[in-house]
Image 1: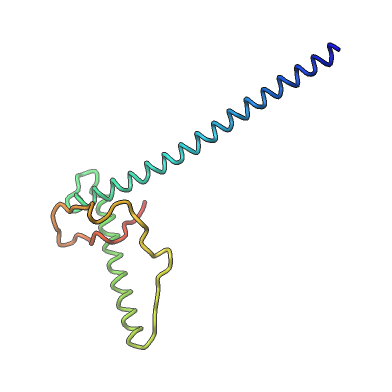
Image 2: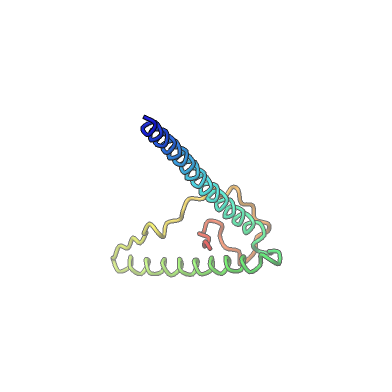
Length: 138
């Protein structure tokens, strides 16, 4: 009988160990998922912070931010040039009787937590891009 009792005790200890390990693994997985959600929150806050900084100081950025602001300004200028060319092509097509509707999902503007009401430009600049244009992501 000692052998059977010893075997039952070992089986019980093993089962309890498996349960404890499973609980730890489940908690670790839950904490990792929570960390990923928090990292996403941080990334969104960084994007919002960058948009606000560019809106306020894009025309006259501080030293360390100048290169990034120049990239944004250049990208916005390229977008504006592309949009002008798109408008020309559509006008030409319409004049020839063609109907062009080029609005793929990838080209649509994503939703943003920052609205135009949140953005107050520091001072208008001649080469400052429009606030409603897409800003490139890095």
